[in-house]
Length: 384
Image (tube, rainbow, N blue to C red):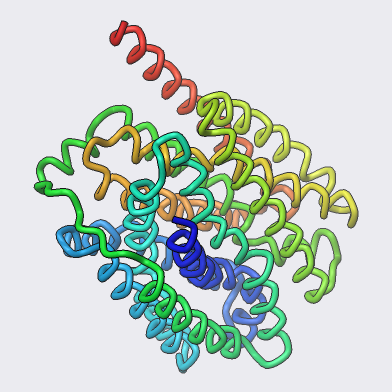
């Protein structure tokens, strides 16, 4: 079990680095292609929309395939897509290559979540899935800062070239350590009925709103820290490391707590997240408070969101498509968050004020969490 989870974590590290590395490179890309930073932010929203729209289609296409073989195909697409990003001669080609790379993202995490849940005892499913997702969070500690540093030193193309050997290593580990796992027999209509269950829909809503709140700020974290906190680009790289440490601790701690008290983790985490966003604008102008607020934000946000993937596997009787759609919901939120942040900036909001927008969205997520809590209480009452 541990070896299989290690392979999934390594692959998640590569995918997470690909997703988040663009944040630290936005100012450089905007300068290189002579475009505004909000327009460069479409590299985030385009990637996210590709995951949102493409992942369910890919999941249905791979639904009856051995899960190990499906993961290998997806990581191969990931590797090719990053090579194309590095070779892109213009912004349009780079955007297209990012969209291609994104096709593997949601499907990989959706399939890998079901695989991880199936190879561990039921009582530790959330921890197993959180461990797999720790590869994504570790990407923010190691992959994104190193990639950003490579981009600053040798140009942004070097950052994408560095992702190619990571993809190849992940493929090798999947071949070596992942056992074959045939999906349970299911029909498309059965999967759709599982997705349409109210308890599943509310998890998808939570994932979307949580992601909107995160990416409204995270998409523009580099210019926020450069222009509002007055940090150098190299200092921003280290703040991204601090953020990565926060989300890694939050993800693992939230997964551990979720196996014990799932709804209190979600509701308490969302409440603390709202308070954090409301306090961030006051902290951003000052270096140490700004760095502490970024760390606290990452820790609380991922602790609150850690239960979502395990919850959807639990609530959907046929979890394959539902698990992938949760990743689609998360990335749909990425796109909405990046667009919402860009819209707020173009209508006069300063970089330092963006957390207020995220606080409003996190408040909606808290309301959705309360609805989910009522669903749980009603289900318990009906069972009694």
